[in-house]
Image: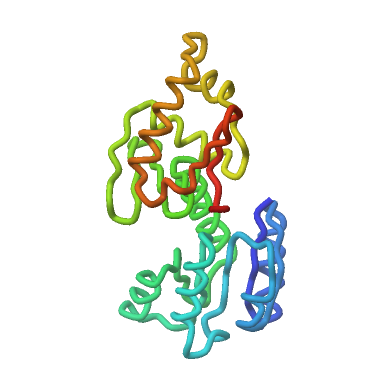
Amino acid sequence: MTKVLLIEDDKSLAEEIYEVFTDSGFEVEIGTSQEDIFKRNGYSFLIFDLALLGTKGLEICKRIKEKKDIPIVVLSSVCNIDFKVKWFETGADDFIVKPFSTRELLARSQAILRRYRERIRNVLEFEGIILKKKEGRVLIGDKSVDLTKIELEILELLIKYQEEVLPKEFLVERIWGKNKKSSRVLDVYIYRLRRKLGKKGKHLKTLTNVGYILTRNV
């Protein structure tokens, strides 16, 4: 269940949004100040009334996006194209001008969530290593890393099971299936992968005679 944090001090509007969203399967928590954005935990979708963020709204939005990869919907009575563009450039996923239909807010929020979920399914990330599954590409910063198909498959498994020790037998089975290769072949691919990841390769640890782990504990 998606938990929404709603920052809105208009009690009647907050109650209406709460009812529409909870009826559609969302969990909704209501806050009334910008402090609640940083005090509350566990939410994965943020909707806030711009008037409650004061003059630091853009800065707050940027801070949130740097810490959490979550959708942000801004509610505002200001209808100015240049103003709205600034918010989109800062990271807002939608900007809805008051007054609005809560049903439209729900529909637009659901559409944003679908896009986020699709992206999450197709993009894996670990400590700045970004694997785009559909494209078969790996990026570290703005640099593309050239990996073979097998190396991509190994990296995908390591990221999916990050911070877990993956036995060699598990990796061999998942990569080659019935056409099993020796663990020596896997060792070679791991060596090449680690080298291609450059400085990020330090996160790929070998546990002698056991397997491999992608870890932040370096």
